[in-house]
Length: 340
Ligand code: KG4
Ligand code: ZN
Image (tube, rainbow, N blue to C red; front, top):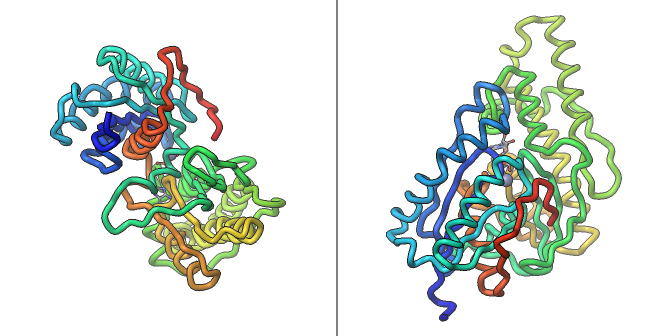
């Protein structure tokens, strides 16, 4: 079979988005996402509701991805799916669907690590986007993970730093909850931060050795600060919301950038990529660009549609594994705590 003619269907169902994408020789033909609005009412993802919504969404989403790509299923060369990490019930829906479709079509099945997806999304062929050369550093920042990964090759990755408690996305979301913002709060904090003064309020940065992160103390600091201020002035939040958001975002970005600088210094690597939902944040994007001037970095920031969970990132990993002949067996099982 020519490596010039490969169609991969990617399926992502690790958390609260059901997504499917068709990639043809590394280029996207379609990238469909059904986001689950139901969780907004609860201020966070409810696992049982997520898996039920995946069950409802998966057939129409895959169907739509094929339709948008203009292909029929007999054209597919392989099916890639997120094996983990993520919510077990959610992962099971995508895994079972992918297995049965691959079995029915008699084509290879490819298991994908969601975190590798966030990192390798940079290898989707897109006009005007450069791919990072090996080795590079990838910082994955999402609602579930915060890691710095040294990437020596597509499937030769080492986690050199990670959070010891909350993920950075949780720091945004939990701070937002304290302020009475909706879920997920990251995008709204980002918008309001642009209108506020980042130095209006000071939050101390956690002290964690080496390249690891910690965000649970930060969240508690925000809680105590707000409780104290609201006691003195019940309108404190409304009167200062943009400044509070700007100060929270400024502190979080400072924490991320400190560790990234240290990682670059320790490894001598100056090619730096980011991935995951929080890489949509305009403050972190700006800080990285500044790193290019200050530290001689070359930075790789994904297009917005590839920052939050999507299936194109799963399909591109599927394509890269397909080229290596790295397939999964039918008895592969979902793994909620899958490691890189
Ligand atoms: O990668 P993702 O879609 O799902 C996980 O795998 O977790 O990341 C979702 C996270 C949420 O915590 C959300 O608040 C955060 O990404 N996020 C942002 C922004 N957009 C999404 N955080 C800060 N600024 C943003 N613009
Ligand atoms: Zn993710």
